[in-house]
Image: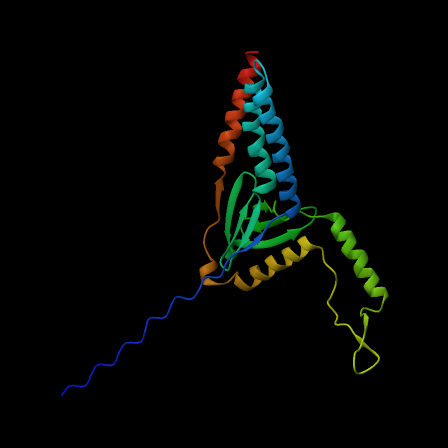
Length: 222
């Protein structure tokens, strides 16, 4: 009589990969959608109602302008993962492993500095000086109030101090703080090493160049 073999343990499913944090500019996207709607409305109206060379001029203008609107408003995004920072700017896509990120700076614009010294602007995380001033004013009001607020206590009577939430920050400054935290915690990880890569957005360049060439030809032959 033979003893049955022990069953091998069931294979464990792989650990789920952490998703990238995606940062974009809601105001930029909203403005881009509005500009696209206006451009399409005017362009299609000229295509349908225009006479002589007007439809061709409208078509060339749309081929030129629409990709530029998309590039500067809808396209920009920042993807922050555990191992790398991917920046999608209007005309380039830059991938920086965290080990290659030297600093993240905030001034009149937000930018990342690679170990080589090359700077890349974060188009999707624009600096809002108005938001910074608004946050500074709110922070000053909190400080004048003693740093903590009072709220009415239920059941025990009296008032309880509200928790101190720290200084008020503008939204884009909070995003930069999150990116700096990732840089500090993941910069030395083995999986966060590698080379910086830059890819040009030919999907934007191609229609822009085609539209510009067609527009120049139409104007020159008019």
